[in-house]
Length: 253
Image (cartoon, rainbow, N blue to C red; front, side):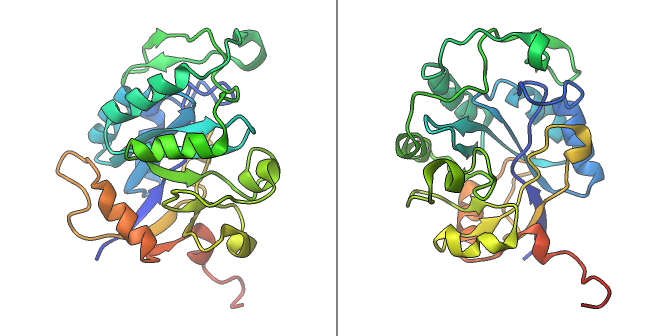
């Protein structure tokens, strides 16, 4: 089985806390340059840059997943990942109905830009996309799972917006894996597979914390569409290694 270098947590210029320099085109190009095989776009509560990202990944020869980093009512982050742009946009539209009507001030954090594959600006959403939804953690995760998403609690061991900090523990859920920043999280991951992710908000962040996954030969189609069930099975079988397990030993230790 081939070893696939993957990174399932990345933002673009649509995320209010991200850099306008990190367009879908830049993300795909940087991912290719960093040797990634599979990369996901997960902007905050919106997948509106997924169409551009699909075109850019196909241009760079990358496999892609499309989704969001959704914020629950408790302000905990969870990744919901889909194999198709259409599925991600449908979930994104559902989330917009649960987003508080908070006007966005670009003078504070910069524009939230919807762009095409050539970096042309198509829209500047007027609501703050980084806000907490009016959906609790359990409801949000179950809704994503019911739509066929890979559900992955994001950076569970982060001091802000991770499940452990915001919820006090990791509840049971329909998770394909959990994302962590540090190896010490194993005991708090409740037996779920652990992966790492870059949570890239700036071009220099792309590919900083990828993980390695052993997948079957037919895990992707010729156009880069991912067979999501192959990822589920590989994760459940323990065939993923987070970045800290792939680092070379330091000074022979």
